[in-house]
Length: 301
Image (cartoon, rainbow, N blue to C red; front, side):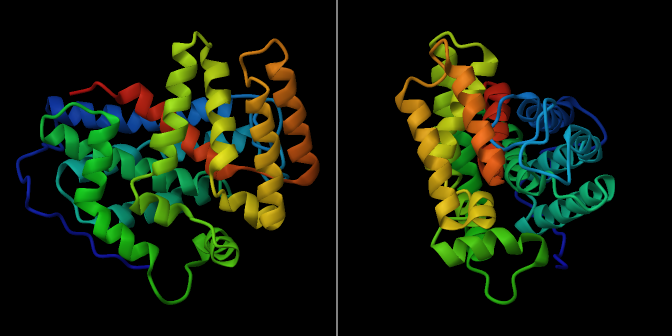
């Protein structure tokens, strides 16, 4: 896909790429995205997902693969934040995202570790850059409103784009079309409702209840698995696999989630079940990383 890079002229003096206070803050937004992806990697037990403990349901990657990917992506998120601050057209964001995917695949020897995260966190970094360029305070509402106002039409058009499916996104889109699910593209066009209405409130709610960061992130992950149309699960296990994954997540939450002495042990049992069935909720993992990023950067002006 050859997208044309272009910058809109809405805010020509919004950011000085070679220095300045706002440029430093934009770099901070991007670095926070890499830290958030590390937060997700370090969490365990995560049902079917890679961590420092094991490779979950994946035979082609481990934690070291993810670390190589994170190192390769360390510059892409700051670039996307700068593009957002400069009023970039969606084509510019898409071009940077495709270049980031290429760097990821080179670092991982062809293994897809963070394609969905590049898309989600990249858009959020761009949206945050636009918010900061206006001098506004970062918050969930500002991020969503900016995402829709600046790139909503382009995201909607992308979600309904006709023609052959790009090979790099074929599996998730094919699963969504086959089973009538809402994939990452339509989710983004709606300004990530699951992230902002389920994952982030779950993370913040658990922290307010006194949960440690590990438990709060685990609670948020399970609440996300329980409701998300995760095309990674559908690709691996069909609609039956997706629904099977949602049931134990819902059961875990109904029993009290992480707010029990046996919470971590129950999460470990769900993890073992996912591994046995080769199920991996990669979409939910992306939402968790995004929630960790929002939690970290919100309040920045």
